[in-house]
Image (cartoon, rainbow, N blue to C red; front, side):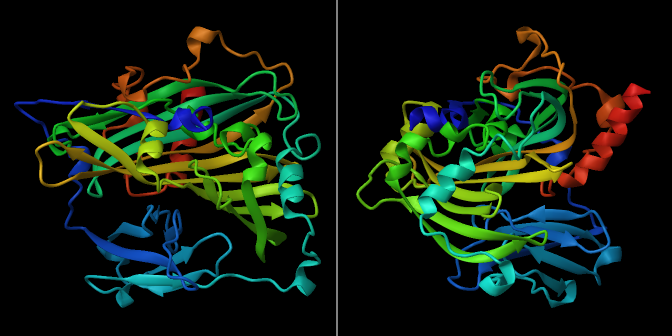
Length: 425
């Protein structure tokens, strides 16, 4: 299991600054904007919906809910009478008037989207575990067959008590080998990178996420099943069809899974959205069981101060696949870890959340694609915050942030594509 999620580890170390500087990146208070907050839950069981989408209609302003289902979105005052769309895969979408939002607490419940079997032409599989095994192993027919050059936008953030303290953004090339040939891991080359930290809010502790963009790339669980559920431990899980649904008019099984009751190690639980007819994984939302503090801490924490106890309180993941030219490919992924630090001789704990996400903006299949030399590629153990590439390239990034930390990185894709196109001209 340590091998399975070691790429999500982080390093914690003490900081001592006499003159902490506050960065404008995190001082986004503006009288021209109104902030709306809320919590998105499942109407069936009142559990929070993680990574649910919140979009302002007729605009590119959007955000996602965090590991507690909470969200915050800043709306221009000129759009204060507009509506927002709340959506989550497998649930019915809601459209709400901003005027209906309360000043203090807004709980938004989404209803499960259930498709009757008669409409989906799907029958409940007798052996659900077998369906999952076949889907995760189904590389030959449905996924990219050639070497592929992808361009992607990557972002990692650190928050203390839900306030941003660090933000890293990068545009990367992904050199992706064919899905059906697992001879070499994919490579990542950084094209543009910047990072900013507000040390005044780090409370004498700093974090480094080991792995950088590989944190999200290795969530391509079709290409890297050993980072998810290796076939040799699949028998440690229980699988069952929770319901039927649709994604982009494609009927899918919503398959839930969790570790068996007699298994004590921290394993995953969550939902898989599978096109049962063609055995294609369209999306996965899952979490790690972190109920055992000591075991969970050993999985994530590589280094820490001696006078601190650190343990994750929640670890959630998401991966989406997209289709083009009848071939499926990794499109988006997100990892979010919440954790606490208990310092010796201190009354109160420190709470932090760390997240990384990546969205593919474009890709081209090229059978003869040459991978760069190893020294040009990012090392899988890299700490992105330590890199110096591209920080001062204002011609690319501009004076202002490409995207606010609260908004989804999909909002940045068109801007990134335009900027990269200008560089090629």
